[in-house]
Structures are given as C-alpha cells and as structure tokens.
Length: 166
Image 1 (cartoon, rainbow, N blue to C red):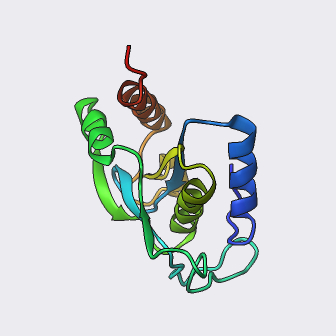
Image 2 (image 1 turned 90 degrees about the vertical axis):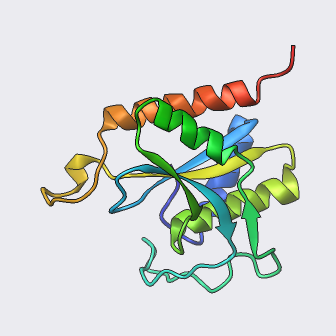
C-alpha cells in the first residue's frame, strides 16, 4: 500500500521494490466512475489534478523537473486487456493515468525503472471501486471477487509472456 501523498509515494514505492526485488511491477489504483479495468499505456510527467493529497498538498506541474515528458508502460497492454476480456472481465486500454496520484505513482515507477532498474517491467492498472465504496449511489463498481480474478489473470498472462524460453 502506498500513501496518497505526492511527497511520500516515491519513498514507499522504492522501498517496496527494493524489498521484493521483482522482475515485474503492476501498480494498481482505484478510479471512481469506471466500470471496467483499464490498463494504462503512458505515464505523463505532469500533476494536473485539482484535488489535494492526504498531506493537503496540490501536486506541482512536473513530477520530475528534468525528466522526459512521458514513459510508455513496459507491460504488454493489449495482451493484458485481451486476457481480461477473454476471462469475461470488463477491460480496456487507457491512454494515460490522469493527473492525480495514480499518474504520479506510475510516472515515479517508470522513472525509477528507466534510471535505476532498466530490466524491470512495469506498468499501471486502474480498477473500479468496490460496491461498498459507492455509499449506495448508482455508480460504477466491481466486486472484490472479480477484482481478485482479474489479478490472477494479469499475473498468469505476465507469467506466460515473460516465461523464460526453454
């Protein structure tokens, strides 16, 4: 779990990656109002949200001052979306992760991979909120069972894509 904090997310993300030493990282974030899982294509070097984080901070215009405009996900976006759909889970590709902390986290993840861990495959996936998070309003959500099944599909697909050649 990462903090909803522009200032602290990189520290937590870096520590989690150092602790686990993974080959692949899928960062997840909730997206209000989405009825399907969206696999993000590009992390943009811009914080453009009008909402403050949990530290009551509004993000700055650039995430990394001298960083590139964006980073492409190094995950197989279309293959992941196809696998989710084949499993009967609503899914779609998405151009970018928006302007709030999901994009901030995605950009920090990809910048860390590009500058310190070039062998790391990484990307970001938005998931709908849980039904119990909608406060009874008629808004898009997805059950925990479906989200767990989606996680399994994502991991199995990545296992197939990145399996060592025999």
